[in-house]
Image (cartoon, rainbow, N blue to C red; front, top):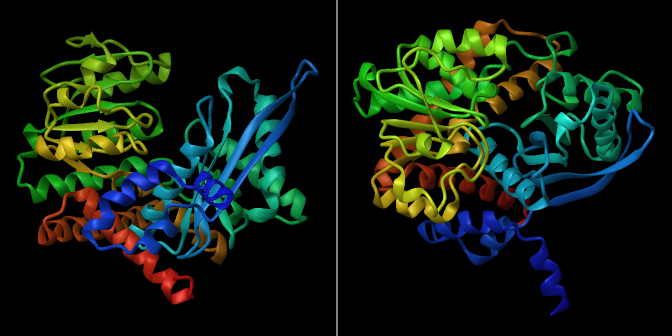
Length: 419
């Protein structure tokens, strides 16, 4: 009994929800289902930080390496006050599926620190970032586990992390993290990769569905790196953005927002401005607008059982990680709302991280055009595989994507002799 209780603590609960949906569709044996419900390695630790005032504070840190069946694990590090072990487990599971689906030679990982970075000075943030690496340096590396930026982390933090790791190892090792500044071995195009990858996916979906792109009405929740870039790209391509929101404010104009004016003012003011013709709305109202495409590009669990019945979009492009809770997927299917899943939609970042890892390994660096051409091909190929597999097997896009990814992981584990 004790053994069973200990084992159960290792189960990723959200992962179990996803797997239970898929298992019956592909006749996944119970041993394979149980194998996938648990991460391979979990690291939980406390990071001491000496603040600028001399006080010592302690922050909870996590790193989960969910699966390394297909190669070294890969996944971001987030700094957020709501980071917890269960969330990190779920996100590392999704990273494993994402890398598998895109055909990358990586497994899945995720990490984070339970902290509000806005409460720290720049020097405190640097010491905390370096402290995180000191706790996990024996368990990461270019051939072991490769972290990257995520929520509230960026290339500046990656620069501190690669430097700390290199100091510990006694030589510069750029491939230990991705999302670095260009001067430290970063890849051109990485900053816009997630947004651009999502734009490629949406463009392919609209073409496949034979929609008139000039009439497509798009709503975007989130105006951080991902939301900002996908909004800018879609506007440049001629799509109509009718609503846009972040944690502070949401604005709406049925006839389409002036995105160029918004971007110009936002870059100066730091917040989404109210522009001519726009009206201020709540985040709840934004999610429930009548539109063709809803793009949640903020944080997890935005569409839940509390609001799913009010969602009116025809398609949801998941640019955030897990913006829809698993229990409402069936409701969206019954409402005939199509969901383009996060493991496909927002995978542009990890694809270009893979390109950065290759460039670090070979010491040969590519032009932005080369990066974008390679990204477009990989995203389009993955979308077509998911789209046509879903049609032939009568599955929704999330189920189709998960089946493809899970089958590849299981096959690799069998080839290794683990199953």
